[in-house]
Image 1 (cartoon, helix red, strand yellow):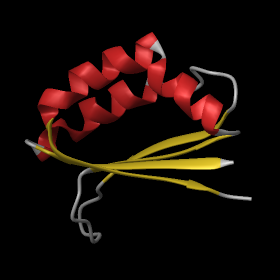
Image 2: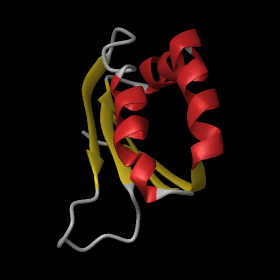
Image 3: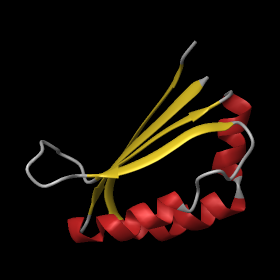
Image 4: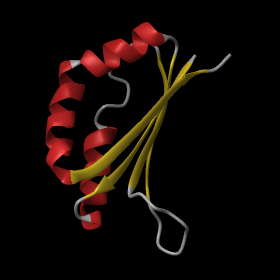
Amino acid sequence: MIRHIVIWTLEDPADAPRFKALLDSCADLVPGMLAFEVGIRAPGLEANADVVLISAFADAAALDAYQRHPAHQAVAAQLGPMRRERRVVDFERA
């Protein structure tokens, strides 16, 4: 299994709900997507970023299919101008 975690800091943190809604539209895009959860920072809880995606894929091929999927690419194009910073960690999990 491959875990795919992405963390964003937005130009305007008030855009977080819209950003999340766009990301949520990518859930269940490809076979082999095992988990997909988007969270936004909560007032009063520690955070140094605005949005996080925690997802899991059966294998690297499923992650690649997700990243190349036209719907994902269209969403990514909309998210790009809204973000200040993006960090990614992909790792294998038994």
